[in-house]
Image (tube, rainbow, N blue to C red; front, side, top):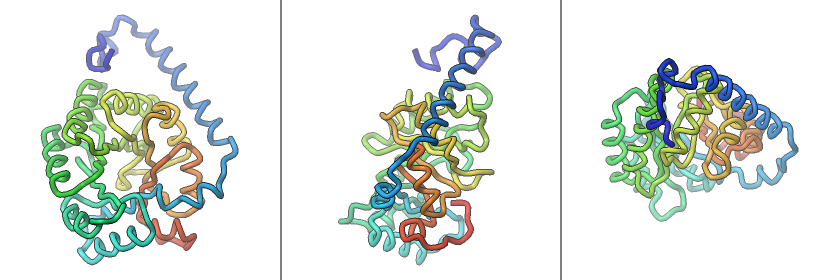
Amino acid sequence: MSFQSRPGAGDCHSCPTVGQCATRCNDKVGAILTAGAARIASPHDQAGIANGLASYIDHTLLKADAIEAEVLKLCAEARQNHFASVCVNPGWVKLCADQLRGSKVMVCTVIGFPLGATSTGAKVAETRQAIADGADEIDMVLNIGALKSGQLGLVEQDIRSVKQACGRHTLKVILETALLKDDEKVTACELSKQAGADFVKTATGFGPGGATEADIALMRRTVGPEMGVKASGAVRDTETAQKMIAAGANRIGASASVAIVTGAAAGKGNY
């Protein structure tokens, strides 16, 4: 049964199981958190992770004042280091697609960014245009306000509509985890999976916080092995990237990508 069709979805007061539902939800989230903590504490092959680190990275440039020369440099670095993709604002997708033609580096862009508060129709239109311009992957921002208002059917349909517009292209759903309680993170992951998204992602890099090991472990435990988990926001060095992967991430969004793969010191920034 979908969240949208569930009796009383998004309205606890109208739900016939009110009280029981809250208890079950708390138990469920507690179990997921415990499993996530165990994952963080377990040993992982850090050397193996380091060797293939570049293939995890979406090399990112999302600042409002980015200029063409910076976008060209981003593409050149992505080619040289064999990053998974470049992640840019929609206006730069065509340029990046041209620059990366013939390479294995994908073009990723952001939709409903950075607030997630645009209408579903606007997100769908953005998605279609981005794909027409050459985008391979879409990172959309969840309707955070609707989620926190309990409007779960609206949230699910928003994601589902964008996924339909994506077709065969990859869709990642940005949760902005720093704004959510743990139970809301779990619900957001479940809705994303139910709506057909391919990844869940921690943050925009423009919110109050970025990726944490605990959130990555929680997200991975919730979505299982079938979906991707992307750590983004405040991943700026090799050690942090390795920890995110060990916690369950299989994609990293970062602007400090070159520093991450070379072990060099990175400058300050949100992404």
